[in-house]
Amino acid sequence: MKNGKTSVIGVLIATVILIVIIVVSNWGNEKMSFIQNGVSLITIPIQNAFAFVKDKINNNDQEISDIDSLKNENKELRDENTKLKEAERELEVLKSENNTLKDYLNLKNKYADYSTIPAYIVERTYSNYDKIVIINVGSKDGIDINMPVISESGLVGHVISVTENSAKVQTIIDTASTVSSTISTADESILVKGTISNNEQLKASSIPANATVLQGDAVVTSGLGGIYPKGILIGTIKEIVNTKNQTDRYANIQTATNFNTLQTVLVLTAK
Image 1 (spheres, rainbow, N blue to C red):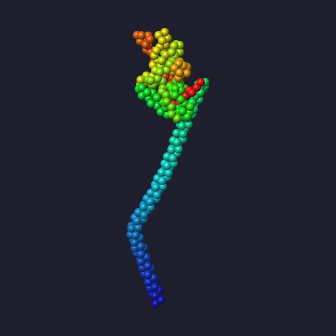
Image 2 (cartoon, helix red, strand yellow):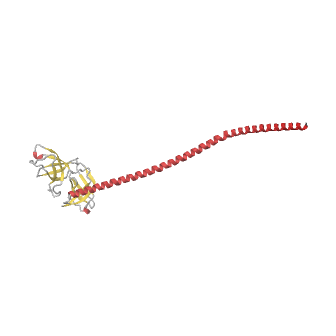
């Protein structure tokens, strides 16, 4: 009997202890959960903040890297563009030099019977009265005063002064210039002079009364006067102006040479 009571008491004690353990265990879990929740409320925002800052730094690093990459790419493009421009300038220079050489060759072929010296214009002075150009050859090249100067299209003028490395040329459009000429439809000589404020037009005077002058007639050098050889084209008749006195009529001549764009010339030294 006594042993039976002891067993029951043991079971009861064991049951109480188990219940206490369960309650304590549950209370500990709830307490730990509460503490963990409290800690989470504090640590999670901090973790999020660190994560945001880290992402921001990473993004900034990427943006800086992208900017550096764009800068390098931009510099490469600028360098390439500069090289292309330099190449384009070199090509233009080569084209210009090639055109100049072609002009010289055409001129030399056209005036193969003459000894010639090629030159190009380095300066021009065009005013109402003076129409002067400076060429890049002089006495060291064999240039002398009164030598005729021509272009591929026709007569330019003659040398009026010379230095060692350059020469001054009075063009036929200068108002002080007078060239003895002939018209294709007349054998008689006429005088051709420059006009004020016109770089493309000459005035033909002293036209014989019996000479037939037509618009479009060619005007060439007569060979008289001791400077220009015979037969060099000066221009064409643009307009005939009749007056009451037939001997006073005159004609306007369109120059064969374009003096506004003239670049290359030949100096005739001898035939």
